Length: 191
Image 1 (cartoon, one colour):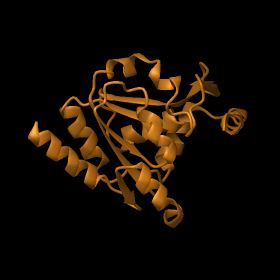
Image 2: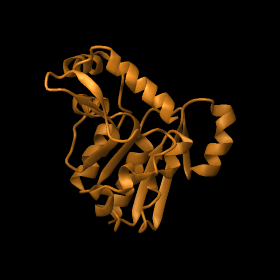
Image 3: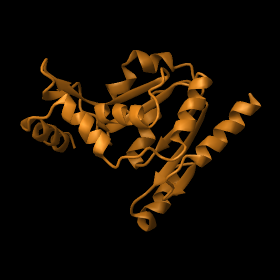
């Protein structure tokens, strides 16, 4: 996995790719946040709930999509693969260790101050769309309540039994966060 990710990153570095190109790529792309994402992020921010976005994708893209389609609130932390640009704004590599779908429980986040600040949190809602996402909460020592919600988008027939065993709730082909928003409203109004 590391070899595949490294080769993909190396290919990007070989083309003359700039920060300006990144802005255009994101604004011209068809990437969409799930329906209800903006509402969810706003509610979490208003109630001072920390949000960790842990992605094997490219953090620079995630941040720009968030800014274009929602907002990068102060309670949001993104742990992902970030591009490294030179002084002229040209891509020269990637920062830090490679994050891929099978190492989301490793040191990339667990050694950080952010994770240590959350160590006292007892309640976690984990949203994921792959089996590798299940390990993202590993190391959260104080969690008493962990709700795992899985989004199953591909290979539904063959993957459903595995997802049903692993996640508490499985949303099949669901493009919205309506259920998550409903759960959050219930929790917030009962506090």
